[in-house]
Image (cartoon, rainbow, N blue to C red; front, side, top):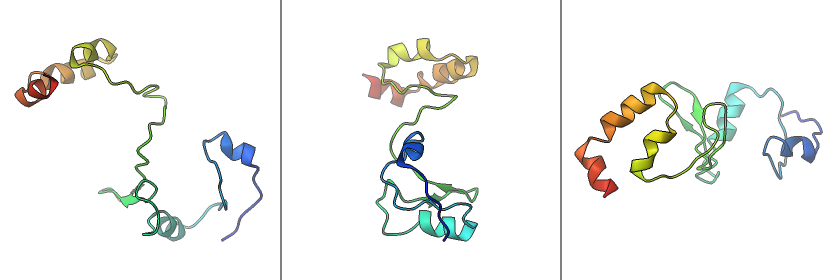
Length: 105
């Protein structure tokens, strides 16, 4: 395992705090072993997806190019916040489902 000195300020820009070690270009095997260790807390432990990727579900929302904010809205206000036509079409279909209407009541 090789590591180089990285300042806490550099890592903080990427939301990484209290890092003990930084590994550059780990092999797939090393990365997989580290990210799927059984001793990691559940929200830090990676799981293997159906496509063979490792997914770490942190439980925390991270803004990105597609979604910049997470808000919880009453069902009646959701559609006005959907900007893509396809999302609005899907919402219109889902909202008519009896089980969705029952939960919204």
